[in-house]
Image 1 (cartoon, rainbow, N blue to C red):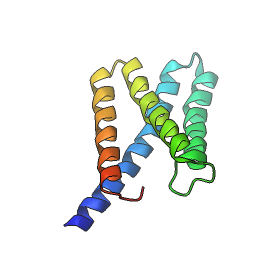
Image 2: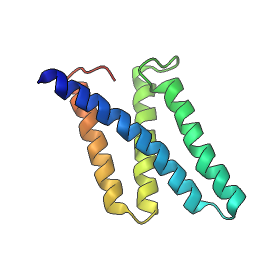
Image 3: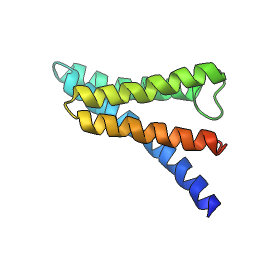
Length: 114
């Protein structure tokens, strides 16, 4: 049962990381003025976020320290919540941030490697 809990939380962590990329794309598309800018934002923001995550917050990040990793994770997930909020999905944004916070807390307290 403990192994199911562990894999479930790691799976949820991965799912919310992917959701952030989708949220950034959605926000970029709705924020941009004109199709070229919409495309640039909808593609560029998720790519920049993924690169930043890979460099500083991923489990095998080359440049992450505990402080830097925490800052990047707060920015990554917090900005996604704010993006949802700015898209007039404030309840979804708040729920997303709460789910992420609970998941990260469970992972941290359970010493699950993520």
